[in-house]
Length: 242
Image (cartoon, rainbow, N blue to C red):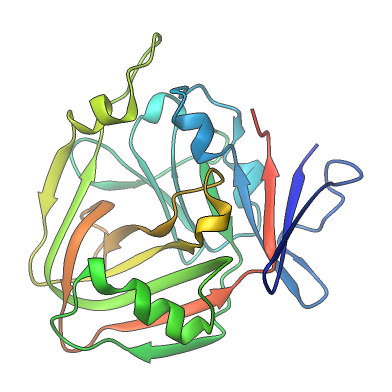
């Protein structure tokens, strides 16, 4: 059954949902939840075995990221369309019945948006997100759209048991420089108090506007037309913990 992690100002409460499906897909009243399969702690064991289908976490979602069983590529959901970016760097629409060890998704309805100063790097986007969201804790869904003077993404190859560490997997990554490309980056900013559910800080995946390239975002420099949109979530529903 899903585990619900509900956020309140500075309090983290963990409870078990009464049954699978006890919460509607992504919202209860005015509350909006991130739904996810697995946790970052599970990946870090390391264990990349699929825990559930993507559909259990991304049903009715419009924005998300994650990976696939065996960390076989990068999962990106933009405007409700699910993509897999493999070692060729090309996004392909993917069947959400595929298994995943880790994925996060939300029905993205931005609370607010704002411009980003040209020349800002991805490493310096977190303060922009925090200011727009009005928080330095919890979990915030993020979309960054526009032209990037520099953008580098990556994907990793499929792995098989016995699984190597995440660091060993990343050492095998293929990187894709995408300078001057209009793109959309999506993901989540997460506070330190949620360490283990996901990656603390800002985690982004993305695709180019023409959907010809994408992956996990390693670095970027924003151009003159980039906008950030954010949505603060009320909590996280974890499906198939491990």
